[in-house]
Length: 339
Image (cartoon, rainbow, N blue to C red; front, side):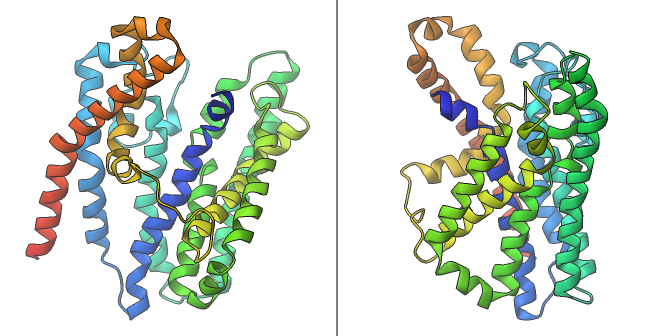
């Protein structure tokens, strides 16, 4: 359990890689046949996918205080504009804090299509590589600035720096683009450079081994990030996220390859994938409700609590999916067919 808990936060970065790959592939695919993707169709599909369940859960946070895992919420405008991750005061407003990653996704959904349409007016491998490299360097530069000007002075004065790390490095979009960029790179290669992709897909085992090695190095760099901002931890602050994202990107490439060891079916994976968004929106609240409503589970033991919590999460996720997500997705798809 302990190693899983220590490494579980990397699941968000894996999600960013997968999102960059899936959304990138979806938007870039028309270029293979000489067409251009529909901007309105893309935005419309994202709105129907994201907003209904999100607004329902957000309303519950404001209408039902017992639903909150922390006493206070950021201002409503931050949630409605998806800027909570840029202005969060984590010490004062801790409820619904996990929506920071949805804010990153929404910024990606907004800007990525516009950048692609602009870049594809005069496509160039050199310009694409240059843009991706500049975005990676931007993230490194921002994190290094925060490290040297905020985190290390606080640590030298014997003051805690964890909240500053969360608010200025871990949550903001501009310092968390690496996973999305890794996924976009995979999408670009698979969609626009099929010969390169074919060569990669024959090296699934190699991709897996290199990816695991890079993730191991990143985990080492991040291991003491809450206790230290010097030495390996300092290097991890600036360079750990691109290193981790590259490793996770190679794992995804291995899973998509022709011979990778990750090419296997996981029982129940389809159900979890279907409910993933609803589970994401409600999982943190369910920890709070499980502890408050069923205190005996924690006393009975860790596995009883974990089993109960998992069951409640699945029930809540299923209800949110069936009552909100699925009807709006059906309506969206009917509208697409009618046109």
